[in-house]
Length: 202
DNA sequence: TGCTCGATATTCT
DNA sequence: GAATATCGAGCAA
Image 1 (tube, protein in one colour):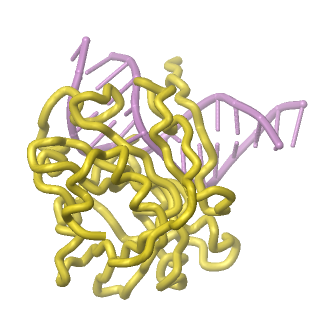
Image 2: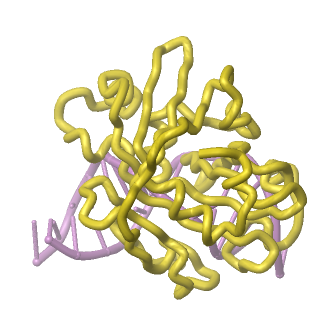
Image 3: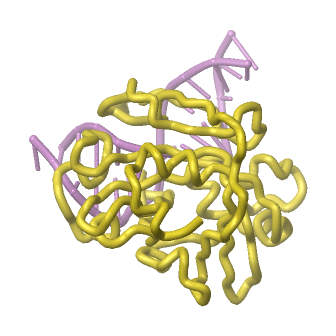
């Protein structure tokens, strides 16, 4: 993966990220994940995007140059991670939804809090789980994924060679029918589809 | 197996 | 005040 590739239209870039390897290195050790599921968010044209209503302190990274990490905190409890794509000033991003842990499995299991009873496929199955397994939080917001000394790196690699499956994005209120979710067909680490359900108050 | 519910940052109304 | 790009514990059937 090169930065020039990430500068393209988000719907072209999103499937390219399938099968690529993301590696984090911290004092605890190294964890690497092969991406199996992503979603595209097309900045100002997409009512489901955090950037749809303009720049805020939280989403500022999406407005910068491509190849930087956008991390946000949601539901009072969870982190999710995106790769900023498109040229600077275009706030498009690809949400990383799921992956397969291929390096540092023991550390990932420890971070997920259950070293024995969960199978490996659940370690990074879902965007919040992916962040936990990789040790991602707001500290990593804005890091350059293509810099050699970065704590979070998108590695150069072949990526997924086949035809990705597509479908509606998960859990969105706005534009739930746009098929901007991409995943590797038949991969067991792809997260289950959950439609948006409005929260009920008492 | 399939539901309801809580955790509470950030943004929007 | 209310909704949200979520997850998993706890409970009913």
